[in-house]
Length: 548
Image (cartoon, rainbow, N blue to C red; front, side, top):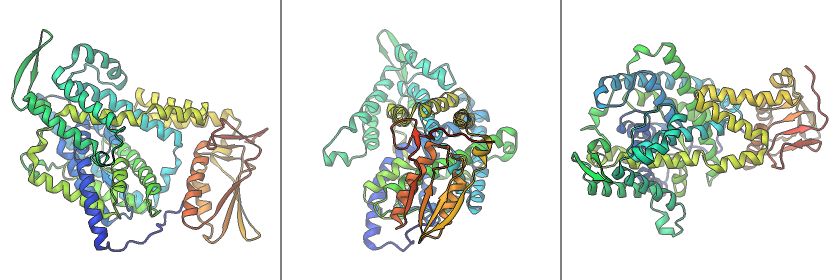
């Protein structure tokens, strides 16, 4: 797919401004509780998430041409940011306020450097590097993030204090939190909110569907928190046990916006630990942001296309700025972007309005944030985690073939057992191992051969021994460099293996080219056998052999 946007950036008309303002306001209602929840789960102050959405909304529309994406903190980065803070010494508890602040400021420094790297990455036209990861591995990474979110936030939702620290141990401890560790009053708030979020998916009434579920959760939880008297410290009896309630179960907010601003500490940024997390912030954040922007492009009613290098430049600049004042890293966020489209947004300035409404709320009504129970925000994240690690994802991978299910599950297990970076590398190595077992040589995997020929008014691109994820970038560059007026035929008859990643990306490219008035035909798969009946499954040429 070409990185050149289809639409030009023209000033919005009066009707567009109105539609953008309305959509921005509705997205603001959704974004506010999610920003708070993501920040707290990331071991940052709650207001840090709101700062991120404000900067993302106000800064990026003037740089990126991504028309309908909403920039802000995302659940997919929780694991990275929280892990970074812990590595710098973040520990829970009021007695460790100094250690928390030091870890927070060191993490901000990592965010600044990672943002600068994203800027350089974009200026060097490096957005295409996101194409090198196997599609199944990326889905496995996101599912693993969902599992990690569930493992950590379930205990907060129940008002329990787990003893474990690692995701697998936290998952194993959930039954204990349910049976003996939970605070019943807090659990009532959290579970009620979680049930509401799941139930709201089945509401069909058109007027009720317009009410954002996160807004309902916030309203309900504030009412329950007031009924329970969470603003004052007291105890209550339940089933023969005494439980405590206090403000510690509510969102903590600063007295003013200026007091929320925190500056980074660069003293540890060039240590081995700092460099590792800079890499994680930059690589995973850039990958998630580009993938999200791609997904939103497919939903755009006007079929406009994002220049991903330009979009990454905007995200990098905004990330650098927001990390300098105490905010989380941001990406293009799919859920809020989808809501933006559904609410009638016309162009990228709806993102700006969403940021402005958040800024006004933080300036005028900061005290209202303190009324929101932490259990309600945890319930939102548990709900998000179940969507990332949905059983539907496992079923989809099974339909793609046992090979893709193995890579998917293997990536999840490795992420949970180690960390995101090692998990992704392990998933990619597992995919490579399968290609080697299928008979591909190392040369075919890493040194693709392509032949371009002109044939009777069309350009034919013939692949070499393989068309797999490691060769995709070169194949894509070859296709996109062909004159746009040419009809292009991609002949895969010589490829011993055409993996799921290439099949999926070719389908996306065909869709994009059709929207741009171009034609891409894929031929030569008649003698290939799929690993399943799914049209995008990995394909192996019958009787194929390759040489080193």
